[in-house]
Image (cartoon, rainbow, N blue to C red; front, side, top):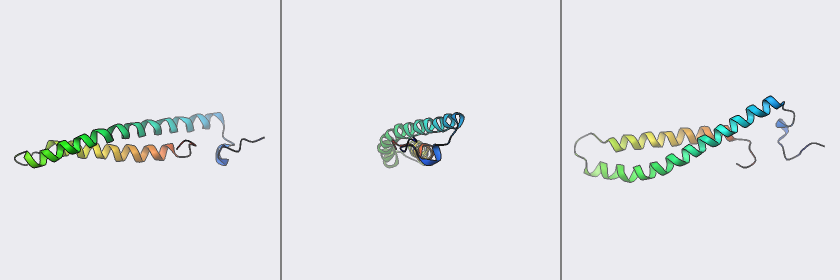
Length: 91
């Protein structure tokens, strides 16, 4: 009897296809973990960048650039991780 908890498109996969699917889902979970860690870093950088904008003289605002980089990493890793992780029953 077929396992009905498995999505229909995954019921006829070969073992090699299942291995590739699991590898993709593991990489997606890794990217989501990286996005979560960089979210914490971005929150701290947001506070630091705010004081950098207010109190730093001149045009050099390095904390703002670091914040922009961290937010970009969060968005790219989060979106690509969610796309790679799609189809898993825990998500």
